[in-house]
Image (cartoon, rainbow, N blue to C red; front, side, top):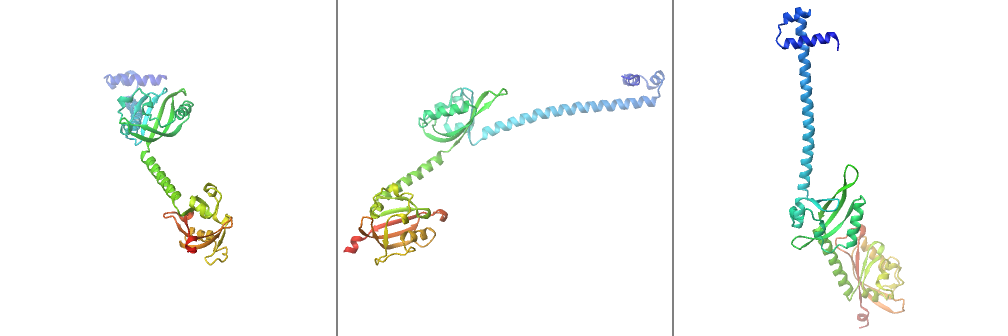
Length: 327
């Protein structure tokens, strides 16, 4: 430190202690004006230092507040989440379950803390799937899948789950977090639709009329036994699926037994229906079977209601009127 600086600090220190400025000026050999300037400069430095300390303290406090606020926001998000959230330790024992867990399962957190989620099992999910789950997450990867679990009251529910590991600062697995969505309504709706499809298929298969469902380019996606019989097929219905009516070894004649043009072929007319044309109602054809027999058929074709024309499905019904003609 320079002599001038030491002299300045001594003057300010003694002046602040109450020593008269004139006496101090004579002793130090400086003017009272100089003493006042030194005191002013010192005061400014002190104020700046105090302000800096206050700003630093404020910034430090702000950092702590922001961290606390983020923590509060995180907890609020977990508590208010529409998804079930469970946090376990590395061995799978539950450490935290949010309110949605209680709403979904009927269990309050106090009942499940320290337990593994296995108490929710309904027996529907194969044991092998749980083995794959643990193998995946213990390897540090995320597992996604569905469970059909059991609530506290014994009722069953479906949930779609995402389970992933949480790592500590050293890179070791410290926890597992499961985020689950209740998809019971979605699954039940899907099952109801599948049941409706199964019932429709059963009805179609039991009909005495021949029924064909045809999609793009007139390919058959469903046929019943009656249709197989009427078309004189020796193949099973399964073999007809994926084939086109136009490609079958059949010869079609008009009602007057005249040979049909390419455009008049029933498969062609059905394709026009598929493109949005008018439905076919009781169009009469004579069919020459590969076996040499002759059969007269009444054909109806129309779009399945609600189908998009870009992938229209046509339902075709066939009725045998050979006996009617003989009579």
